[in-house]
Length: 404
Image (cartoon, rainbow, N blue to C red; front, side, top):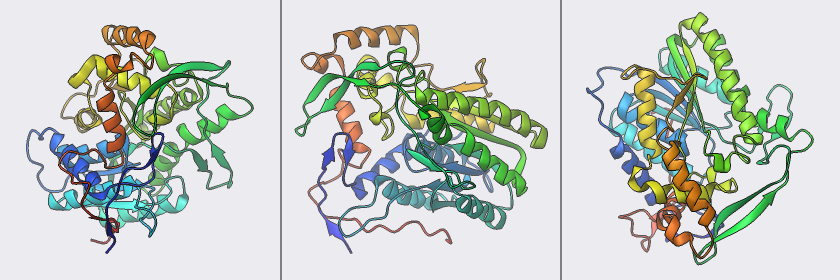
């Protein structure tokens, strides 16, 4: 037993510890927020693999798939266990909570903690699919955001960077001091140089997604009609220079090109499909690291309020389209668009107007800072309604047993 009181301690948007009870409640709240399926799933649900299942949109895909589509299958993520000095990562506790809810709802969902880029993890997943899930896979959701990737064949390690392409990028950004007071300041990011673009594409493009499909296809594990979706983001013109037109954007373009290649191959192989799903803005552990994104999302919430669509609602719609509950609707580039609520001309005009006016003195009137600051804390299980943060909590939570 390792019970203790956990207080939020952070360096910028990065928290040093996570709160198990807060993470558990967040997962429960996400499950409850999923619209009920049109009819209760009967018998065994479709078999799904979610790669990057413990955080952000990958977590939303997992929970929405379980609660709405009745999936069973495997979630893959890479999290740190609790130690004597530190709690486990938030994703560790969220995975434990998700596994508990899956069991409570009679969903056979296994969670593997390992490097999704490695061949050994791919082998482990393939073996589980063959032995436990009848040797078939109906859906694969790919949602991996990582700073680096090691190619399992060559041993080469690639590192991604957040940089503009061509010229320096100067933008406003939002930060909070140790007391939580907001500050709007300008930062400058130097442009990509050398092989920065190639390295970022190697980490965050479609290479590993395609390797997963190849690996599972070689084992004969793709069911007839198999569908796969990689989760992506386009975003606002206000952040385009650092995101869609920067090194990350080059990786997203590669991801989309990979989807087109895979779609053609899967159509011939199993009558299947491959798409990218473009999601809307959200506060995630990945997005808060990008200059300007925190300010943009805070202003977007200030404009939209409750009309800002959370990840869990977006992913419920994605599952409806993948499973055929609703028609699969694609744009001219073959992408599912779950971001249309964010990118209307009206919404973007209002956000741009607030962006121009944003300073440290005015930001409190322009952005929903209380919501944004709480959302950042909730990534780590803090600021969750109904949790007593003065009470000791058990931190030594075990990883879900894959054999049960």
